[in-house]
Length: 276
Image 1 (cartoon, helix red, strand yellow):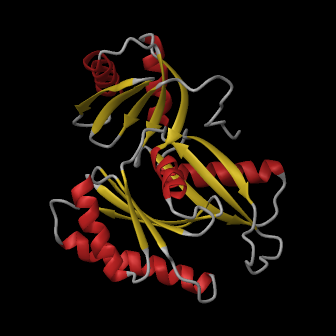
Image 2 (spheres, rainbow, N blue to C red):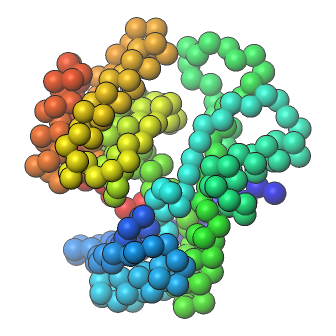
């Protein structure tokens, strides 16, 4: 059975726990005051270590809230765009479950799927439909249960990357036009293309962009590949706006200059990534 990953029936809590591959961060927004935040590095993703890290980050931040949103980064979360033929609901659920297990690398993942409307101007696909499949590994469900046992209720689970792509779309000068997104995170950098509320292209480069200069060359190659993908898909259209997330202002501006050189005519926005 497809699990509902993003139920939203109550006001969203002010606190966000950002779960990355090497760290846990507590972020709590406060009206008219500086946010409360604290970060704890973690050596691995063992549930007991993660629970202790979350509770310690809350304590160090000075927060006393007992509920939060859990924002999960890869590899503990995943998302895929799938193209599937028409299927009966039971068959569709079986296919989505298998695809989710493959993406998570394990059985028992928590996932949801949403049918995507075709883009204006797309060539007809016959009866095939596109679906956005998103989910988390089973460890996240266990983590939510363990936190609940320690009186910290996880009200909502979201994908860090999907939230970041939506933030990039909103930050672009013209959100209605395609946006090339450069998302710099712990241990990886994602290059994506967002248009009409959809992720049309995404590739990730593993490694620390700050520590390994050679990754810069691979990144520029991936950016050009993404731009070429859109030019082909749009029959000659170009990417005119780029949003960079996850870099300090100074480094983001330098990266923006190199992007502007690689993609002439593009506007480049450097934005600090926000909690979900």
